[in-house]
Structures are given as structure tokens and as C-alpha cells.
Image 1 (spheres, rainbow, N blue to C red):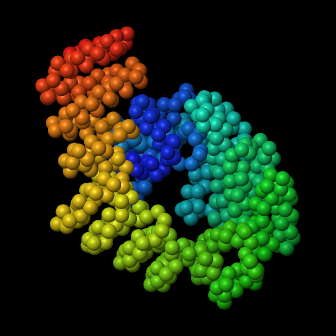
Image 2: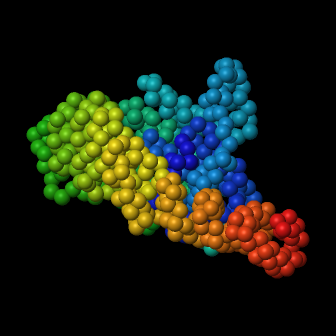
Image 3: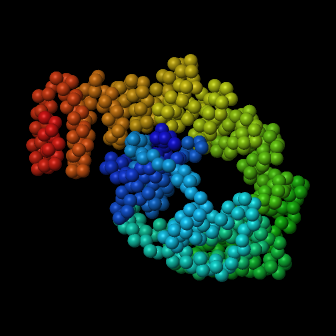
Length: 590
């Protein structure tokens, strides 16, 4: 990953207008501290009002799509201002990124005893680590084909109670007072994380097709959560999201278990009691899909007709209930685990689960049918992209390109698809297709790297398309993004016209340096403006202000106007004569 993997347009896509504006201010104030890259992960420490800096973690997936998290309590959707500030630093100040070895590299030289000693030492410092390790071991056991250990209901009750006792958060979040923030968001996250670890162990039993053994631990978990119901912050989405998750686990557990008639009645009554308890909180329907699973299991006649390939009319007599999709998802999960792939196909098609149906067709080798059905029925680009990747993974390269090309004409988010298709088409020798995809990528993300990629692909055809791309950049792109393209092409006047109040200092400096030989008056004005703004921001910025003024002095000298420079400098010194630290910097520029 490099700084070129992100752009200001991408940052804007992931942040609200307010978060982006505040993040720009943070970036300009230099609050982004240590920036460290370990392999494909970049972490930055960003100052806020809390005693400790927030940690921003940035990574990019295989398609270049960014993923970022921050330890601040912001939860209003999109990236927070700390992520914005960190990403702007990654974009504009790559020289500040410290390269360090990955954790894998650091640990690679340790033997078994050293690794064990290291883990035990870490566990001494963090009492929650043993439970985390245990949960990870459960998932690793399942992933490698092993059987999970039984889960003790009594232990589950203790662990749920302990999860809700996590309230020792003392950070001052006054940084968010104007956004109605307190520390509840972070407490909720900590509780959810602990509960997820417990629920993962129960889910491991279900995915190992031991649903019956998951029922009592899941009952203990549910009752533990409901006993703490009043303590939750009901002004957030946390309680509802947690209950929905629990309900889905119950649905899959009951469908995975071989229950007697009496056991079915017991669990239906238990679920009903919980829903009555939750009715006043408007969550009275959360276990309805699980009740249906307990009541009918797999024996419902319309469902059996679909599974036997005798019907494509859906699995319900009359109108499907609101929880039909939840039941279908659970059933598909179970059918896939048990290798009942033809029944999976019947059910997915009948219930309109198009993405699952198409990818399963590919998996069982029905390539042509998957392509034909997908081309006819898919309406969203991201769904078609899923099919294209599935085809590609199965070695059906030509068909994957066919589907991907069609997906470019569909609605929805197309940038990840277009990036993938651009590179795959190049490898397949389909230059026109690669150019179409590359042009769409550029239109979505006007960056220098995307511009240069089109030039590489176009080869001899590049002069024919170059001007159209430049015109697109002038008219329809974000100012900051197009500046680097204009500078690359030597279009200094276009670059100057694109500089605005929110252009980063690093980018503005590049324009100033390029403009100084041919547009010195503009360069001088820009340098003076930057310097005067920095002076107003306080003593910690005086050194940077002096650096901008040194550039302005060079411009005056180029114009043969040093007398004018000295007059301006004297006026500046007189205006700020009480700022002794600043005056010292200014005197050095005479």
C-alpha cells in the first residue's frame, strides 16, 4: 500500500461533509502524530481532547478499497475527523510514514517456548486476553476441521455478567461535546466485543453441525443478556442489533438440531416468554423466525416441495412473513455445510437469493447457466461483480470478463469492479475493455495514478484521449485531486486555478514551486497568505510560517523587487513585534 492508494475524493466518499471539513482543519493543525506502516497496515496517532491520542488504523483490500477505524467514540456514520486527518497525512506527507516490520516478521524468529512465554506475559498484563485466545482457538479448530469443545452454560452466564461490568472508562471525550458525544459509545463497543467472543464459541458448535449442544449455552447467553437489559443504553442501536444477532443464532441452532415434539414445544414457549418480556421495548418480534424454526423445522410441505425440485413458487403458503429472509439464510447455511448443494440451488432460486444461487451454480460447475441467468437477472453492479469473481476463481476467465463488462452498465457502486476489470482485461490482452474500465475508474476517482494508468494502457492511442480526460478533470472533479494531474502535464495555470482554501499545504507548496518561475506574483501571494494564516494559529506554527515567507522572498528576488519585500517584512515585524519568537524568525529573512 502506498499513499497513491487513496485520494481526497475517496476520503470524501467515506466521510460526511462536516467530518471532512473538521479533518482538514486537524490535518492543517498538525495533530497527526506518529504514522507507522507495517506491511499493508498503516496506524496513526491523532491528538484529540482526550488525555491519550486516538489510534487510526488504515488498510486497503485487494481492489484498492480503503478500510479505516478509529478508537474515538464517533458513530454517526462514515469516517470521523481523526481518520480524515490521518488519511490526508498519508496522502500528502508520505515522507512522514515510518516503515516497520510486520508482526509476522517480528515473531518469525521465535520458537515455541518463546512464543508461549510471550503470550503468558501478555495475559498477565491483560486479564481479558485468555478469553480472547480461547475464542480464537475455537474458530481455528472449526476452520481446520476439528470439533469444538463443549460450552458450559454456567460459564456463559458468568462471562455475560462480566461483560456488562466493563465500565472503567475515564477518557475525556469533551472533544465531541458539540456533537452530543459521551463515553457510552465506547462502553457499548467493549460490551459487544466481549459478548461476540462468547457468542462465537456457541456459533462454533452450530457450524460444526452440533446445534443441539448449542441450545443450553445459547439459553444461558440470552437470559444473561435479558437480565442486564435495563442497564443498556437504549438511546443507541446497540440493544436492538444485539438482539437481532441473538435471534439469528437461535434460528440456525434450532434448524440444526434434531428435536423431539416435547423439545419443540419447550423452545417455542421459552422464545415466546422472552418476546413477551421484550414487547414493551418494541422488540417483541425478534425471535419469531426462531419460533418458526422450532415449530416446523424442515417439515413444512411448501419447503419440502422446493427442496425436492417440485416447485419454484417459494416456500410459503400465501404471503411470506417478514422473517422469511432470515429463515432462508439459516437454511442455506445449513444446506451448504451439509453438502446438500442441489437443494441449496433449489431453495436459493425459489426464494430469490440471486447472489447465493449464482455463486453456487459456479461452484458446482454450471458455468454457462450461471452466466446466462446472471446476465438476465442481475440489476446491481456489486452483485454482478460477485459473480464475476466467482467465475474467475473457478478458472472461467473469459466468462468472468463477460459478466464484468456487463456489470459496468448496471446501477450501484462500480469503482471496485472497474478497477478489477481494468487489470484483468490488461492481462487478457483486451485493451479496449481495459480502457473502458480504466476511464470509468478515472471518472469516479480523478487521481494522477488513475490518469497515468490510462496512459499506460492506451499506448499509441493516448494522445487521442488525453485532452478529453483533462477536460473532465477541469469540469467535474474535486479541485485537490486534479492539481497533481495538471502539475504532471505542466499545466500551471490550471493548477493555480484549482488551489483553494482547503488545498493541503503540501499540494499548495508543489503548485507554488512549479508556478514561481512563470507566475511569481501568484506564488508570492500564495506564500504570504499561507504564512499569515499560520502566524494567527500560534507560536507552534511560526517556523512553518517563516518557511513560506522564505519562498515569498525568493519570488520577490526573482522579480528584482527586494525593496518591496523588505517593506512588507518590516510591516509584518511591526504588526507582530510582541511575538518575540516570531520576530526572531522574521529578522533572519531580511
